[in-house]
Length: 434
Image 1 (cartoon, rainbow, N blue to C red):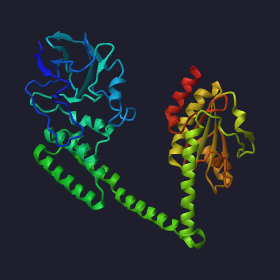
Image 2 (spheres, one colour):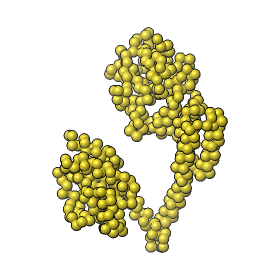
Image 3 (cartoon, one colour):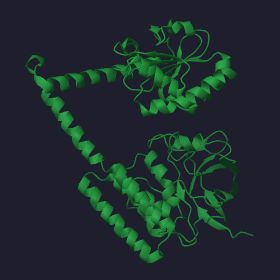
Image 4 (tube, helix red, strand yellow):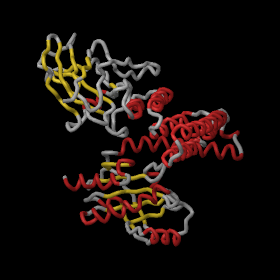
């Protein structure tokens, strides 16, 4: 029988709760901390709450979803506990013991974090909707391996500072120096936080010293070599960032200075660059407004002529779903979408789905464009705007690729990143099934 350990939790006096706001806070180590693979008892005293009993506890291990789909920000984190699926949250009856309610649960293997709240079926005790998160501890009294590493997602969702996140991973590295994943993440966060090229280079020197130290302590291995390799990649990814920041600062100062000079007094390359930047910024704002308002409304109609002389209008596609795509020959992400568009058209074309592509590439000979289409096996209707970007202007296109999924009535139902890659096929599956 697994040895039981008692972990008393009072919502008035927080015991062993992880604090996101104090990077220097050290959790008090108790003899009765929960351990992986063993049972322990939680005790709850409903002081100043609306719970009357019988009381149940809802608990979740590693409660957040993948970071791209979870709620973010300190005021939103608790929603992740409430919205966790039934397959992840567990509700357990608590037994009355004097003034307390108790329940025994088991900490499974490979669990790092725990969240919980209490309910009587009608009322809930959320302790002012704080996110109850605690490490799972091992027999040595330290958080189990990867607890702090897994907690990075939580800290980023809470919008904690880079310094706080680095401290968190550093503690994981200190307790588990052979945890290569944490070693990689620790150095990656340091590189990402470096403000200058000098600081970045200094950290790379420190990284090599750390590597030499690990080789000395643990011996050279293929796994350890790849830790250094990962550091080199992360260093390379960040090496241009300080330069880009300087360039951005100089550009902003340039715009501020030129804004004080009347247009009639501007001349040469300064005037040309300034006016192009102003036009670009205006277009960016128009694009944001257009993309925000177009969803759910009718797609603006337009006439077009394809490279082989075929004429038509966007409204000709009414009656079924269609994709309106803006792209460019020199755009890598645009070219990467072509295989997915082929597959989607092959799957849903028999149902009536079609694609209309507007190529925004300028100064390209028609025969070269036809050659390119044949090479990429683009079979759907394609328009080369050339020097007449009237359609792009109508749709306030700022960057490519840009997608609009239009329903049979001519209304935009999805756009942009919502229908990039495999998401397009998933959306169409939903629409055609319904």
